[in-house]
Length: 187
Ligand SMILES: CC(C)(COP(=O)(O)OP(=O)(O)OC[C@H]1O[C@@H](n2cnc3c(N)ncnc32)[C@H](O)[C@@H]1OP(=O)(O)O)[C@@H](O)C(=O)NCCC(=O)NCCS
Image 1 (cartoon, rainbow, N blue to C red):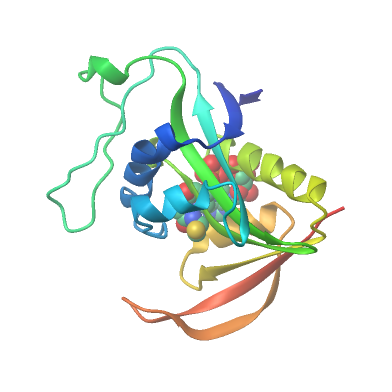
Image 2 (cartoon, rainbow, N blue to C red):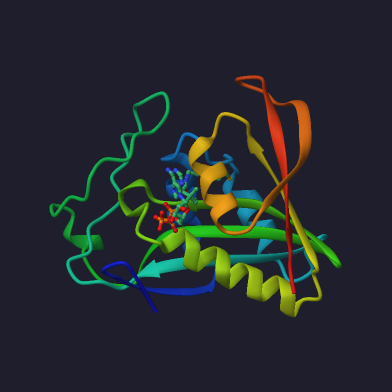
């Protein structure tokens, strides 16, 4: 499928994706910061609750690596670089999403797109794929929490049909902040 000018593919996350997924999460200020062990346990077949974990690969030409400044207090993802030839090939993961399921409800726990790839419709394709997976798993309502100040994510979720269902005061720490609870009806 195509998102903007990019050819992308959504598939199930596997263990070999974890390093890349971890790096993408730590390169985005607003992304939940899971440990690698948490991703690993989410991928277990007997995970409780059950998880659906998807990644999106950019298979476009001239792919460049995610560059993370590990010395920064909050890792900074820079623009595409052409210097690290090791990653300059197709099939590089550029985003991911994880949901936990207790049908008929599910919680979207995280969705993150690498900064250099955002606003190209990749998040939309990933969310659409996740919604299809959840529907197929007998989920009729998905929920999520998002920081009240995360205007980009709020705009994204609204554009994908999510509705505000309430507030969770002081839900987040560091920095303390309210969460907006959002809900999506699935067919
Ligand atoms: C939120 C996020 C997943 C969106 O992914 P994306 O690939 O950039 O989104 P898309 O390009 O598919 O955008 C789809 C639609 O969402 C809306 N949208 C996206 N970014 C937006 C922004 N910054 N402001 C307002 N609306 C926005 C638009 O309606 C957009 O459609 P359009 O570009 O045709 O106008 C991505 O920005 C991200 O990873 N953010 C950091 C992590 C995060 O905050 N995750 C959510 C909390 S876990």
